Amino acid sequence: MANAVDWGFAGQIGGFGFGLVFVVLIILAVVIWAVGLAVKRAAAGKSGAATGQGEVAPSKTEAVEPKKGD
Image (cartoon, rainbow, N blue to C red; front, side):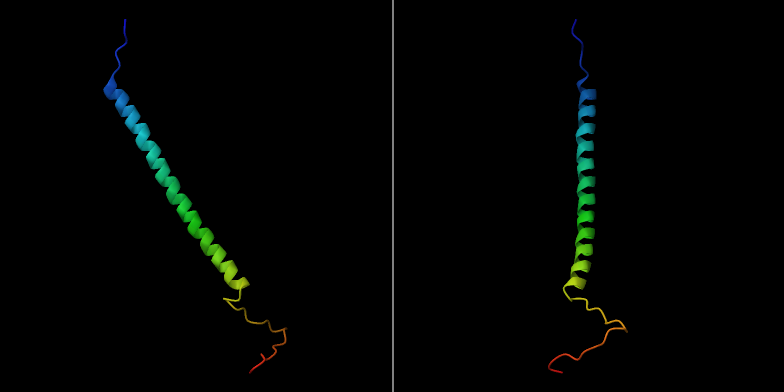
């Protein structure tokens, strides 16, 4: 005796699984994009201070020497 397959129900299960995979991939893509933005901002902040883009005022204990050409 052959077992009858309910192709409608099988299609629903397959469609739900297929859709769920795409939803999870979209969520992962958004999370990875947000983490990338955060890393870029953090790296830009650190590199700006290291390269002199954001100059730090000298502390009160440091002697301030005039620059040549002033």
